[in-house]
Length: 237
Image 1 (cartoon, rainbow, N blue to C red):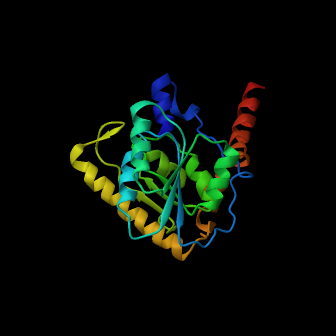
Image 2: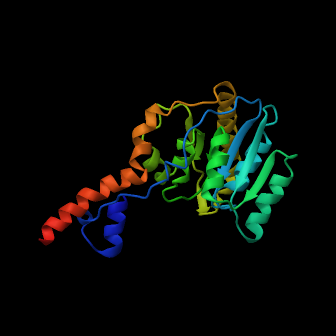
Image 3: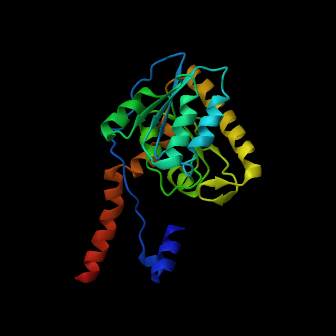
């Protein structure tokens, strides 16, 4: 899909476009044994905005009162959107820690200590943060966006990854009013299932997605670039 879009945008044949993607630091984001705790640690990392789905995620979590969980809200933002997110977080009786923007080193530490990563975006490109979270041993709840599916591939074999249907959108940061309640309920149900699963099985087996993770390490990205470079070099000579 990206090849066709790039070709159309710049007026060049799609077959001359090679999409290799970016990579994540697999020396920093690594799986370690999770703490078996009654309180499941959840992490969101990204901009505190409506386009990222943060208000709907927070309202969904606020409904899950029968399970013990704590959310780590990582990232910054600006203006009324960030204020809305922080206001919702403040109402959740100390169950949310707002870390603000952090370094990659700090984020990797939070992910290693967390059981579940959530990305409720209404709009995304290729969210490498999902791979960072998976490589750190986190379960995943994310919206079923093209970029998410492109990164994760066929996730049906991995019970620690669940995708939630994206609501119809008025624009990139506003679901159709009639779909918002269903979106929150779907997020709530999916998060609740994964919170329960994390409490029962803190550690996940990454074997089903090892190939996907390897393809997006920097070594994996270089392995995709190298043959293209050699092929083009031979053409020039």
